[in-house]
Each structure stands twice: as C-alpha cells, then as structure tokens.
Amino acid sequence: MAVISVVIPVYKAEKCLHELYTRLKSSLQVISEDFEIVLVEDCGGDRSWEIILELANQDTRVKGIQFSRNFGQHYGITAGLDHCNGDWVVVMDCDLQDRPEEIPKLYAKAQEGYDVVLAKRKNRKDAFLKKLTSKLFYQIFNYLADLKYDAEVGNFRIISRKVVSNFCLIREQLRFFGGLVDWMGFPTVCIEVQHDSRLEGESTYTFKKLWKLATDTIIAYSDKPLRLSVKIGFIISLLAFLSGTYLIIKAILFGTPVIGWSSLIVSLYFLGGIIISILGIIGIYLGKTFDETKKRPLYLVRNSTNLDFK
Image (spheres, rainbow, N blue to C red):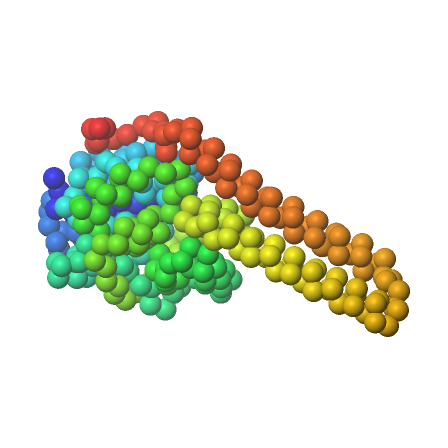
C-alpha cells in the first residue's frame, strides 16, 4: 500500500508525458518516496503507450493501463481508481494544466481531516469559448441535477482511500467523476491552486463531446427533464383551455366568428414539436436504462505494466 497514488487518464499526450513524470516525481518525493503513478492510456493513436512503457521500465512506481479502445476520460479515471493502492489518491489531467507542484498543498490540507480536497483553478488558463461553454454547462447541470458544482473545479483533487473504495462500488455506465464524488457527501474542502496553460496541442473536448457529456451526465443524475416536460404539458394544456374559453365567450357574447386557420396550423405544428421532444426525452431515459441492464464492463484492458489485476 503506497502512501499516495496519482491517477491520470492519458489521451494524445506523447509530447508531455516525460515532463509530467519528472515534475510528478519531484513533487511527490516531498510527501513520501512511497508513491505510485497510474497512467491510463485511452487509445489516442499516438506514442503515449510506448512512452508509458519506457517510464515504467525506468521506475516501477509508474504503472500503466491501456484500454482496448477509446472509452473516455471518466472511464480512464475509474480504471485508475480500481487499480491504485494509495492511502491518498490524486486525480489530475495529463496536459500539465493541473500543476504537479500543487499536490503537496492538497495533501497537507487533507491531513486536517478532509476526505476530499478540491483544486479550484485560479486565473484559469483556457480559451474564452471553453470557459464560457464550461460555465454554461455547469449552470444547466446544477439546475437539472440539483447539485452545486463549481465550474472552476475540474477533476484535479485528492481523495482518501475511503472515498476511493466507495467510488469503486458505483458501477453505473454513465460516468462523471466529479459528480459521483460530490454525491457521496464525504467531508470536502476547496482550495485555490495555480492553473497553467496547456503544454502542447489543444483540448480534445470538441463541442460534440461536451454536448454528449452534458446530456449523459444530466440523465445520469436527475429525472428533472422528465418532470419539466410534465409541467410544460400542463402549462400548454392550461393555455389552450383558457384560449378556447376566451374564443367561445367572445363568439357567444359578440357573435364573432372563429377565424385564423394559419394560426391553427402553426399551433398544431408547435404542439407536435413539443410532443415529439417530450417523447424523445422519455426515449433517451429508456435507452440509458437499457444500457444499464446489459451489465457490460465499464472498460476493457488491452495491456498493462507493473500492475497485478484484481
């Protein structure tokens, strides 16, 4: 059992892995020589796995997992947590925007009696569009999932073995690491850390991927879209009833003929769109329920190094 583990999902990171290892080693040695670095390669198609093997041959404290195909960042985090051994576990990204030099600060704060210490990014070094979409996502997510998740907090954090053990019990298909840890409710504190610019390349999170993450996460954490669709249905029905009552009273009292076929057709199309949207929301929930009933493994491992699988 190591004193501290670092779990890092790796995707298209061949240009920064050597520097990542060097800086991690220097930072972790401040805490203890008894550490491990678990790198989970998510089939990015570059030389990341070969570099992980090189680092693992140089230092047995570096442990590697390679997926059979691309499963996604949060599945990579899950795999790392499944196979790490530290009393304390740091989760961070591989692009060095999360600074390894902040780990001793997170560890010191955890020793004050917290099971989770979140790293809040001070002066976030991301593009304006990414910061904007991230803020919008978390506002919508918090509203629909009834959570209070800070947009300035990413995956970077330190968690206790107790949190890791309980996290590994949760095997639902839709994975959102931060949301699951928040849901567990262990004593949590947030501290500010410095956030660096990306060392190489650009973010691999496209708008399509962010949209999929957003929808999957909201569906996994809340049935609020279903409840909102019921409210919308009742509101539309009420408006239709009031409108119909108004037209009937107007026709009886003033003899006004009922006209307006164009508005009628538009209303029908509008209601048809609302009905189809609501059926679509229900269909998505049914589809995700179907996925859960399959009980497929969350990920498949192609290769590993310096690890004994459970």
